[in-house]
Length: 376
Image (cartoon, rainbow, N blue to C red):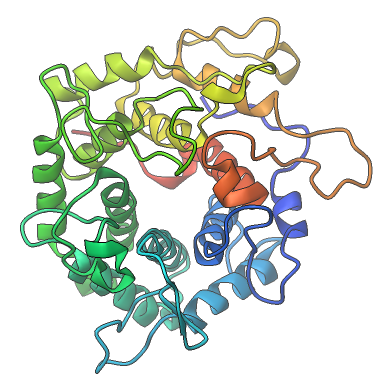
């Protein structure tokens, strides 16, 4: 069942946050993530039918895409050819986490191309895909963990991690959605999916829990806040989704074990305790459970918006995530440009700011429109 519509539209506050001429700022989040939050905002618009060509917000989407194109390195002689987010207006960033930005920007460009078949985008999207494939460790996956935190060592960094790998797999899945290359689609090396599958097999324990860099290890955590937020099985959700996109059946034993784990950690938004709010986890959990389907995804009951708070059950993921997000959407403040957004109070909200929180909340609710449910 499709989600109950929010009383206030989500995309309005995202448009209001676009105060810069071309891109979205991280707001009160950490510096250095403009590429990432701009890409998430573009994905939120795309998921609701607003492209660079059509829709109420087409001008904003077009500006965002043009900005991503402008900061992509386009120099075949450079080893950074195709990268997005490392060199911006001639200045290099100083942290290896920029590879997250590249992955999400690749996802945005590929999705925009897949939807519109705008051939002015194709070369940019293909270069981004090629650079993503270039960064992968031979035979395995990706990571932002580099020797001495060197931002230039993201190409074959040696180490692997499930978080960067998750975003890369989603980006490459979006590229594959553009169709076969002989029909104008983007080229995606199959070895990328095979390597990701091998990596997730390596970091999965016998109970089905998947870790960040080791079996059942902790997921990526916000530096300096490691002990504040409640740990969630985010990497288990990441690994399950990536495995299914890489060809593993949703009926496979390891997927069934993982489902039991994340169903024990349904989305909740307590008003008196923000430690369990993790929209990053909810995003991956929602896309994972949608692919699996069945009563754990949707119990079969339907509710109106007014019944979400008092009557809606939380026995299935679909109702739990809608209740957590829709009832806590900022509403009812006349003249407030944040009206319709989500406050960046959960884990990672402090890093990405209001644009991140609102974009990933919207993308989560757009699960029905982004990827078709797999048949295997």
